[in-house]
Amino acid sequence: MPVERQRWSPAPTLEQANAQLKRTVEVFDASLRTQVQRVNATATLALTWPQTLVESDTTAGAVVLTFPSAATVPGFRIDAVKTAGANALTVNSVTVTTYAGWISTGAAWRRVS
Image (cartoon, rainbow, N blue to C red; front, side, top):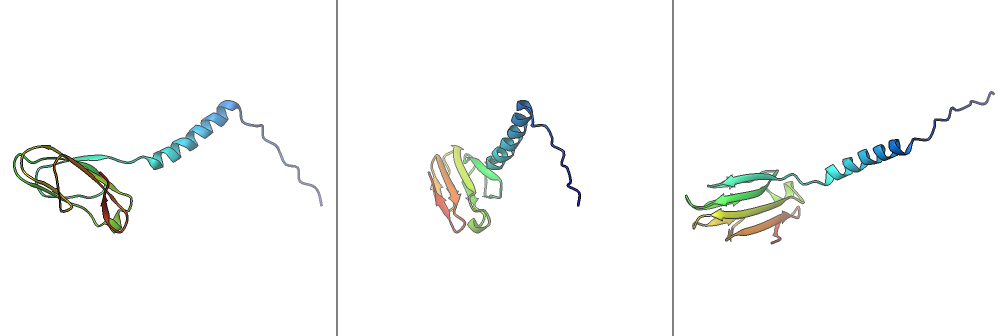
């Protein structure tokens, strides 16, 4: 049986290796980024993914924000900010005076700030 000879390819240059490494890092970095979608709420609002920052003006009346089921969005974070107004901002059955944040554990929503 004849021995098959393999053709060797030259080692990549330093520039080629750096370019490949940069592409690999960009892929991993992009997967770790959090998408932030700002929503201005002035009335009752049922939040959905990826609404992660909700600014509420309660000047015209009370604002109520409801969360999606924690089981459907594990690791999902929602931040609520009351920007203006004297009326109540109620988020996940809690009255928010200026700012509050929650994160889904996959089983329940936990207040983190």
